[in-house]
Amino acid sequence: MTEGNTVIHRRVLRDEVADYLIDAILSGSFRPGEKIVETRISKELQVSQGAVREAIRDLIAQGFLETEPYKGTRVREFTPGELGDYYAVRIALEKRAVKWARERQASGELDLTELRDIAARMHQCADSGDTKNLRKLDIDFHKALVRASGNAFLLRAWESLGNYYWACLGIHYGAKGIHPERQASLHDDLIAVLESQDMAAVGSAIEEHFADIRKLFGQ
Image (cartoon, rainbow, N blue to C red; front, side, top):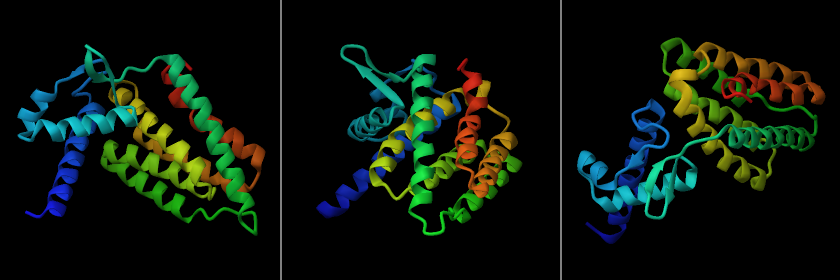
């Protein structure tokens, strides 16, 4: 195997381990606060500890895991205060994204084609009970909304929050989550308001969009 292929293989393996850990966290196999043991995962997946270590490093950066000296790595726990701060920032970023997206369009109208397509696929997932991909499409929907702003720095800031949100929602989804069809329908409601071009209504709709989830965590 050439050196280049070795690098590609290591990257693919690292991603596969990360995907395995994310799935385990989102399904509840690893609970908030649970310790992640490198050697156990390496043995279970029959991969090198180096690949597991790299995957863990990626997930710490994304917010799924946290580490402390002498205490090891654990599934990250979230406090209501942290969630409140997160929602406040995310709502502000998405409001700003819509404003800038409108300003960069000569007509002042947003192209909602991609959002409609994602929303339709969300309903398909809700109908089939595919909550894992429903959550991923939820993130895709809001990422597309922010990307429409045309501001790479805003998108970069949002992406770090997006991972945080995904982890938070996934960890708690099984016990506290919103009904899948309602989760999909909330995005239809947001599209309808975006079509209205009423910026005040859009701002209120973005705040309302997260109201159900915030109530689940006492926000």
